[in-house]
Length: 139
Image 1 (cartoon, rainbow, N blue to C red):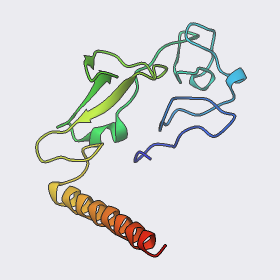
Image 2: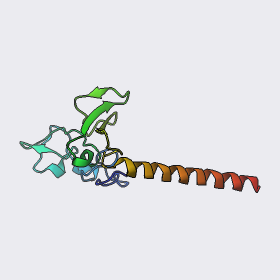
Image 3: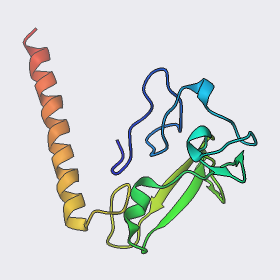
């Protein structure tokens, strides 16, 4: 899950691939790019302009912490930078490029908080691994 976003669409609904704040809808209720629309919510991209559904770029997790010291960059599946990344393109990604001293997917973590979370995750993984080994030896 990504902070400050909704999760993926539930079964039977479509929307943006992955975590997003664009509302999920039943496929038959959504218009594709170029089709007539009255509101943003009737377009699969979540954007209606001049009565037509238009393309929209993906947004970065948590708007990259809104610090102004970070950048939202788009990359393709090979990791190459792109100028745009459509919400309908499953092969590109919006990622935060953190400034020095900012950490995490959305660059909202301080060095201390990030290190605390990394240490906690390592502890949890090693505990799970060790518990699995102990259970295996009991067989």
